[in-house]
Length: 588
Image (tube, rainbow, N blue to C red):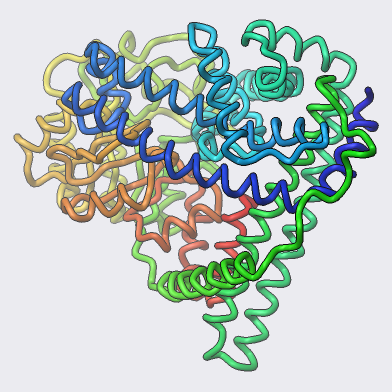
């Protein structure tokens, strides 16, 4: 069976049974989300409570994994989450199988088979399924309607850091290629697990074998679906925004209602479209897997036209959704107060963490300039990010092995530009001259001596920068020490990963990697009197969204863009906010 033949069969099946597909998909997906979501959250809270921590972070993971009960609860969480993914896949794969055999299954039967598959797979090999469901498939963008795995992504800063060097860029492209190839070769895994009785290892091998000569066809199908979806969603966005702009010019008082309806209709159409695409792909994969294929007799219509209850429910959803969306769009039109922090200065025409990058950021009008401080071998403080100079200077030497004069005499290169490593004192002196506050990040190479934190504060004080500047660190003990000894200094805790309740400790602000952020985290922080900064934000759509949410600061390598987006948010209209909401909805 070729991919082209499978596509033709899938198109006929979905066109005939689309009402059945939508009903089963929406109901089962919603049930799993409503049941699995709270249970997963409860298990995570229980594991964290057992370990005596508020959140799972890079700093607390060691404490969590050392507690037997916490580990047990996290393992149970992984089983529940993997089961939820299998049940959500069952909404499509098993429905495709039964429709192919001329049967219209009940929703509880689909859920029961998904749970039975999870029980059958219980054991060490379930880890293989979990790895595919929560790492490989989300990174490749293939989740087949599994809402449990949505939102899983590689933190953007990792790609940004890798792409700063030719070798890193090559590694990034190689990793991306590997993820895409593995997704294509293992795309049949859920289908085989749900329909053949195979164990995970056997299903992996079978998927690899069955896709050997179909990878190009599957890749072409994926590209076609992406291009078609992009064109359709672009048209929906254009129509919705055009209707709101027309209302703005003809009947402004009706614009909130028009925008609310437009957003709600687009949300509903997105759900319907995603469900039908998942159904289409499920039939394609089922056909390729050879489990079954729709016979001509099985293509008779399997669902009656929607009755008045379904119509009434749709109207209620439309009315409630439109009201909520209209209110949220109007409320988003507030003056942004988000500070723009230039990450390692402005590096458009200068090397990061140099005096030139500081001056460039000041010229742009950045509110704050972020920099990294390390201690040299002689105890001096220098401004450099990496503990080894290989990336920035092409020299394989550790900062901890070099004296301050050696470091400041080192030529650094980036983007065709050159510069030198400045001392922290010189950097602070120039910042004071430019009247630019600093966000100083305390880096560590593990061989520090003396009082690094105290030395940093002393430099800030010497140049009159204590009142307006900030100091942050990954190490919570360093943050607590700073806050205890120097209460006049605004201190922050840097968090690369966080799941759970926010616990800022003694910090005045928290700097979070953007994928760990949520509106709930922001609310918790503000209730505690703590500000939230996000790093490293490079996408203009996300910049505007964070500003509208009230995030206190954005740390970005593109300060000019961020300043421009802040001006856009300050002057945008309802149609602009609607367009951003729509683009965020479809991740475009």
